[in-house]
Image (cartoon, rainbow, N blue to C red; front, side):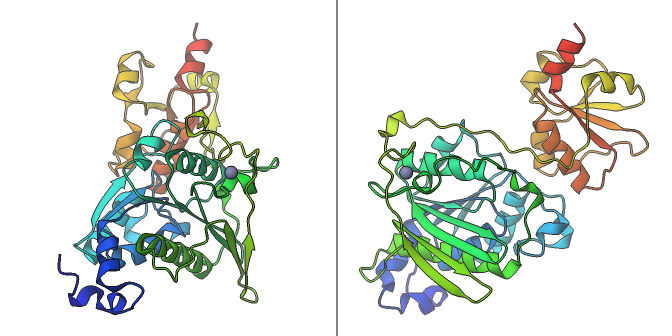
Length: 359
Ligand SMILES: [Zn+2]
């Protein structure tokens, strides 16, 4: 790698970055959770800046309502997996950067292993369940976490996960009581997401380069109200009874429940059985299918839908999707709906509930 090449000259000419800083950026591994309103601008700037290795986690597909702020995506990509589309776009921007796309949902099962492969984590998610999971795993793994959040005209950025410093749970010990998954998405101006995502990219660069003049937002919360562009930096204090960072690392319990959105029609197993005209589709993994399935069902794995392999299904009859417990089938229905199918329904309770109904 030639760090004196023209590509990075506009940043390496800065005393605070220099050739040394560029070298550090090239050796850094950054994991971005969510390629949405925050992830898109953050990823564009980090890839352009020459971060050596970037991971993108997103199991969602591009939808029309995303395009107003998720600036990595185009109209033709509606229905395709965001992590894969983002990787394709970003790979063309900078050939120096290794980009890994992860098309699965981040959960308590896979997060620790994934975080261990990166130096810094970016939270580009929009729901509390994911934010608490990301915080707890970052604290447990001892990885700096660049947090960002947007709501309406307001934005927030901070850095959590640093030893002996406050974490997200010091601020919010539990999800709010009246917590509604953010699937419906409160209103947001794309440019506000751009401000916060860019700020997150800058925090990542500051942490990696580590020049003495940089003061990343560790133990501090930066806020902006874009009605009047008022910004503030609040000092955060560590909560000595924080359910996450006050514990020994091996005592931190990682728990996660996937938020479920309410835009997919659902039927009970009884209603599914009565609907004799419907096509039943099992979206579980092959081993689950092999362990038993509804006789009349066809098998189309959720992961193949996430990868963009959309099968030709009938449009003149109901398509009832089921999984093991009724969560993955909602995701599958959302993907099919994003690809133009309007006749998709999820079976609540999944195969387990169907078995109970039929025994
Ligand atoms: Zn804490």
